[in-house]
Each structure stands twice: as structure tokens, then as C-alpha cells.
Amino acid sequence: MAKSKCKHCQDRKETREGVKTNVGFFCDYDHAAKYALNHAEKGRKKLIAERKRESNAKAKVKRKETAQRKKELRSRSDWLDTLQKLVNQYVTKVRDVNKPCCTCGTANPNIKYDAGHFFTRAARPDIRFELTNLHRQCSVNCNQYGSGMRKEYAEFIVNTYGQEHLDWLTDESQHKSLKEQFPHWSDIEKEIMRYRKLLRDNGIKPIA
Image (cartoon, rainbow, N blue to C red):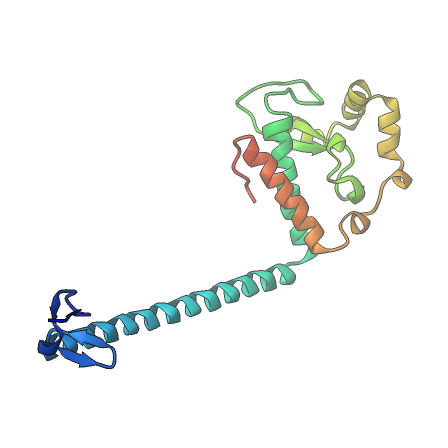
């Protein structure tokens, strides 16, 4: 006697004793009904999963668009301030970590240190991110109350980099404007990402 495999239970049964449908052979009508219900449930779950993937994809696109829009709405000064925080953090926590104050020489571990500018951001915005214009400096005595200790700072730069380098920093014609350095906010963002990576690579969590 010929036998066929039931699509529901996978058992083999004499073909003449089972039920043939347009989707296959079943042991009986009960198995055919159960198969149909299971098939419908699988279809329902598949549809739900597809809709969820579509919804997640749309939400992802929306989040990306929102994030992009927020970036575009940020002011240029806000972008520059974020970059400055990271550059300062890099100077004090990585490049100059544990080095003494560049102007008074203190290495007191119990005081606060800043990334002190030789030429201030207001006076020379074009070199506010130039690393040779930034060094670890004690916050209170030198950077704040000492107004940056210009004379001592100049001596430090000459001793560290040479007189020619101080002359180069001083000569504004040697430096591009901030607008030339960073024509678009995305250029500032790239530099922000670079400093974040530098900090993380040195085990430091970026503050901005």
C-alpha cells in the first residue's frame, strides 16, 4: 500500500486512509486543521516581526535625522567651546600630566591645574587650539591671579621651543583664522572626534 507523510506530525500513513488537500497530505482533518492554525500563527508572527523591523528602521532614520538637525542648530561658538574643553583636557591629563606649572614650576598635587594660554583666546583666537600656545599651568596663582604670568610664560616657550617659535606664535600673518581652519561645523566636529579618541586611547573619559 502507498504511504504519504503527514505535513503536521511527519508520520507516514497509508495514503488512502488520510486526507489530501491543496497544501499536502494529512493523517486526518484534525491534523489538517492544526497545521492550518500553526501556519497562520507563523504567518502572523512573521508579519509582526517584519512590521517591527520596519518600525525600528524608521525610528533609526528619525533619530539620525534628529541628531543631524541638532548638530546643524548648534552655534559655531558652542562647537568651538566643546573642542576647547577637550583640547584643555588633553593638555592637562595626557600631554602635560604630572608636569610642573609652566610658569612657576610648582608640582603640588593638591591644587588645580588649567591648560593656560600664552596668547589668550580673546587676543588670538587663531591660535586658541595651537598646542604650543597651551600648557599645564596652576589655576589660581598663575593663570588667574597672575594673569597668565606673561613674562614667565614667554621664557618657558623660548626655553622649550626656541625664540623663533615664540616669534612664529606672535606673528599673526603666520596663522590661518579660525574660519579658515574650520570652514564648517563638521570640520570642528572632526577635530572633536579626534581629541576624544586621543583621550580614550590614553584611558581618559572625554568631558565633552
